[in-house]
Amino acid sequence: MCGLFSSSGPSKMKRVKDNSKDFVDDLHKEGRHFGAVSHFDNSYSVGKPRKTPREVKSDIGSLSTGGRTALYDSIIKSVLTLQKAQVEGGRTGMPALLLTFTDGIENESDAQLEDVREAIRKAGFLPRNRCYFAIAGVGDASQQELRDICKGGLGVYTHTDDDIEEAFKLFIAATLAVVKGRESYAEVKKKAESKSLKVLVRKFEKIDILPMEYMFNIDTSQSMSKTS
Image (cartoon, rainbow, N blue to C red; front, side):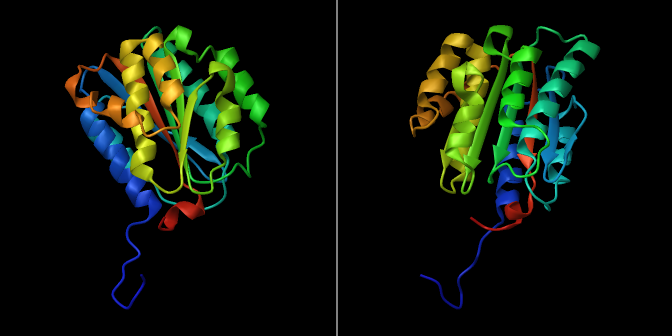
């Protein structure tokens, strides 16, 4: 019930930043992991791979909102950037994880949905190559759109009405899948739309995360400035 003393609460962007930083705190071991932050609105920008959790969290903290939603372009650019960074850094073969968060429907990219799927396939950003794509959507994000991007084993997705914390559980579960291998990834794929992700999340802080490369690809469109 709304009243004179009700509060609108933190914006979606604030909550995404907080959850992303918590993820880094739980995951990132200096000297073992490389993390990067990309973001998208009308266009997209991909940050540099960082060796320290402090640097990754600084990149997360610098994000701001505005514009529409170039989701497809951002996924393609992020996949290609991760692949290039691994080759140039001599980290080919190290597990890689792309984590995309969105609260809206694609409305600004030059690329089409099938271009995204083709880019993932062509880059070999697939579980058999120890490369994993996960996308979480909330609110107005289209569950059908997320499903279509990921179908055929190209990725895993989840969608909740407005529960950003629940959406981030997919990212934790996907990280566990990277550590445990393709069998676990198949398990996450089956559970990605359900609350049973919580079962996997409980294991997250109890394991030693393998050396890996990961990237947050975060929606910074104007709607992210609003509360849920």
